[in-house]
Image (cartoon, rainbow, N blue to C red; front, top):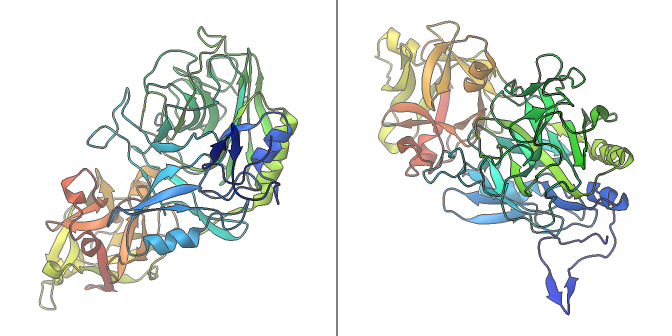
Length: 509
């Protein structure tokens, strides 16, 4: 298979696909390795890097919410890392969403906003949400890039694919996930699913799953686990239910692989930053009706279940699907390529730094409200007019101590000055002041990542676990809002002003 340098665009002339770029790859990508092993990629998705050594085409598309404009992001060089600077320039002073994740394989299997299915999405028309373009910053080989942060309700899909395995045909796949970002919802998947977005029965899916769902299958410990979503079952081995050979695995960058063919399948995993893959199961199909032979339909999903179940969360960086059953040796070579790519973390915060331990107050910058500060009254959070002559009680209610982010220390959390142990957090996208219960959900809800103010003033405070959403005042009430979203408080009007806050010394020290 000749590697294509521009895999999403070509001209058919006299039956020949003609594409631009060099004929041979300057570097080797995962899909070059799969092709050499006789199991070529038929889908290749990544927002962080090219997956073929000669690929120079689009990796993904972003849409700017302020004006609806779009742009595509390509690698900096053939086979290289995404041009994050181009995205940062395009999205400066605005919010951006990932609208398309392009298929680099040349088969046109691009991923777009998932349509409604057995479970409706949160969009007004039942579609799923799109991911923030800036929610999952990383570096790859020392260069900045962005992954795909999937919050509950977010999902991508292609129900009209080309070359993806159907029926009992053999296929393989891998994905790189964030092994620290997961939940027990259904279902954070990447792979093969139904073409009608409905549950059409046992064996109609073959997708990688990552999370702590215990409704169908589990592995050793408390999870999270890499499992296979085969529809109506998450499987970690031959038996339905628990398979102790499938370990809890939490590498920050996690390689997960799945492959399946006639009465055989395998699930493997490892650290995407170093080391080799371990085999968690390799053998015959599960001992439950409907899975031998398989009935795969060939759609591709990301972040959701086959019937559009949308309660899961996770982060995706790159992944492919192949034609044929890859050998362990081929997968091992791909793992070596992944570890050599040099994935590393970077801070999700990007605005003026807030000093941990300092007392602060947050002043609105919208023209109507420049004397108003974010304050609590009991558990309720709204803006209040605060001046030097205000009562000491109100000044204390409008003052917070900056803490290292409860869910990510690169971000911040805001502890009440007058109610020790209680923090600003969102629930149902509305802001509250609640006592810290030390749950994972509370820590995520109470963590905000400072960004430059969208109107050029102060800070915008982006929700850690819903990075399309920013701390906003709307009709004086506090929310985490997404520009142009489905809720009244998501209104696009004066959004940039409403989410920009001047951070000053606290009214109460």
